[in-house]
Amino acid sequence: MEDNNLTKILVDSLVKERESERKFKFIRRVIVFVLFILILISILMASSDINYSKEHVALININGEISATGPVNVESVIPYIKKAINNDYCLGVVLKINSPGGSATQSKIIFDEINKLKKINDKKVYAVIEDVGASGGYYIAASGEMIFANASSIVGSIGVRLDSFNLSSLMKKLGIEAQVISSGEDKTMLDPFNKLSEKHKLHLESLLSSIHNQFISDIKKSRASKINENNVFTGLFWTGTEALKIGLVDEIASIYDVNEKYFDTAELITYNKKDNLLNELMNANFKISLENSIHGIKY
Image (cartoon, rainbow, N blue to C red; front, side, top):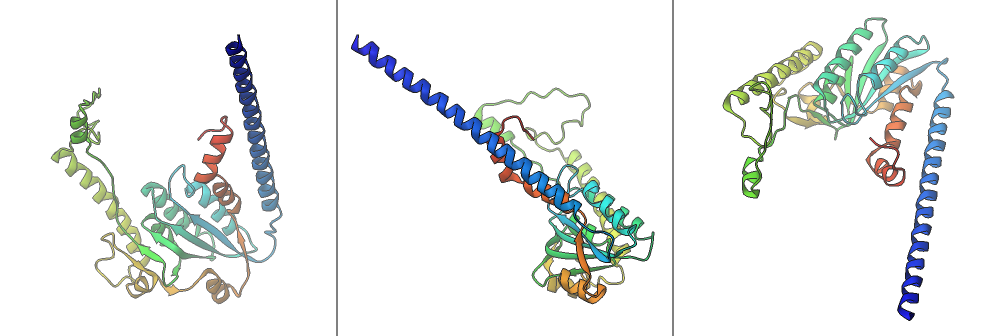
């Protein structure tokens, strides 16, 4: 009888503890969600207070990986440059670049669109590389009239890469056999469970070479008269100081130096600040926090 009473007490205690834990989790989720909404509202309100009807320089953030669904893509850049170019109070545009690259397609489209927009009027578009302007990040920078960098910036990496893995040996050791059903003899050429054939390797090399040649062609169009080294298109990267010597950048200068020298220290207005703040808000750590707290929000 005493054992039954003890068991009942333990069960009741466990039930109460579970209920208390559920309530705490629910309250925590509500608090995090409310904070998220408040921060979102404050961001939207702050962006609405910007005065575009006075002389200024448009700052466009190119911050992070370039991809269709990432922080830097056509939609997060081009509409804002278009807005700046069409604003009579805007004296010019500065691309603030901190990007290691990413999607070849997104980089190419952004490069092409900026060059089209530059023809609308005589407003200058300058690119300032801060920490890194490599690969696709440099591709976008090359759309500027001039490229600036810090002495310790990482610049260059004009190349193309495709990563693939061969897990067939590991799978064999584990005694696991992949069963892939496909239509088309080349459909599974990047299957990590099969060794890449020589035919497929040659095809991929040709593909990357074509994309690389397009990259080189656009850089040469922008900076043909400035580049004075033959190895700038091999995928190597340099410091800002070294990049200046080989013609990948025009001056060692910060955004503030550029603003003072070319725009007489006008007010700097970040046009895509809202998008960048939202991206920062939804960075990896915050996503993890939200996903742990609010199970209804998924990415």
